[in-house]
Length: 287
Image 1 (tube, rainbow, N blue to C red):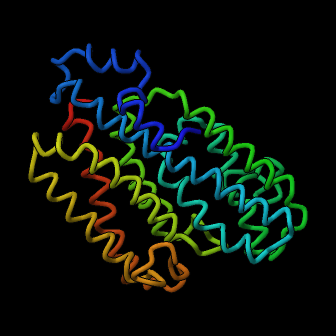
Image 2 (tube, rainbow, N blue to C red):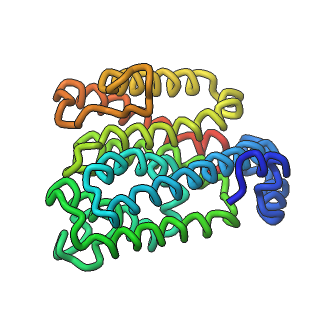
């Protein structure tokens, strides 16, 4: 994969296939509140963001799966949560490939036989082994499968055209996922590392919002201010549970330590954010 420096050297617009640029520039203006050419830059910048996170995901997954195949339970446990953050940030794009999303990030609830189902693979199958069974025994093939799937995802995204409506809609999708599975604590039920995933989803949603914020502000400045404030409220609550306020890489306390009051405090702005961000596509004329 090219580095960010290499991508930027070719120009941001070069990240978009010619057909995608043409589609943006020739889209019927009667259907868009924002000029189509104004979307080219933010979409290209978002692809840079996704590619950077994929680079990190590939490298971190390699270290994580190497630890499992080496039988190092404690190292694998340590690497589990920080590895997943890179996937959680880019889920709106990863989920375009339903087969890979299922094999990388499905939970046992998605399978009739639960954890015993041979089709249950990916991060959460390994999470169960590491944090529930405290072992890596029998996990070599699952680890290799995860690595192969992440490499496949990386390969598929390289030449992918990023539809503007999918990118913009991804902000709401990420916050809806937080509201549906993160606040409840069901996502990482064995490792209790939900706050890492929570932060990854918030990071991804905020990146999309920031990239399109100048365009949104031209349409509705009050909307932009309201969304910004709600993002700040969520970040402030998350910060209370950081292990080291000065070192974001230090991570978070176990989700078991999050009080019921704070779970409710998180649910409020998260739900409002999801609702507000769901209108961003319409605001920009992308529905």
